[in-house]
Length: 157
Image 1 (cartoon, rainbow, N blue to C red):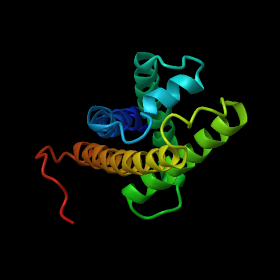
Image 2 (cartoon, rainbow, N blue to C red):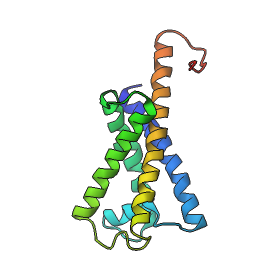
Image 3 (tube, rainbow, N blue to C red):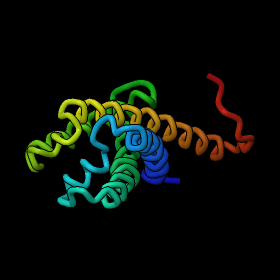
């Protein structure tokens, strides 16, 4: 499996993790404006949560996952999780810059302004932790398979 493919698998799992947090947010509150709502607004489909969810999965899996697979070796930190966090926070900064430059200024009004921004940063950090962890496990699994160790045992820490 290529680095891009590993990144996309890791991106899918990271997106699922964040989606669980978003589902809890939506069902129990919402505490803040749901991220898929923000995404739908960013792409000009305000109020269409289905489009927001689909875009959320596509961006998290295909775009960010694949990009992480390419960039992971170059991210200047030591652990896979910190590489994922750095990558995800940079993605958050790019998204926030895009929202400020190209988005509707009312985009964050529905969910409390700063609360939305803080929630998105927190979920991006969770995304990064899961992304880095799953990617590293896939890389390690590939190394074991390449060296003939098919036991499937997790590496000792």
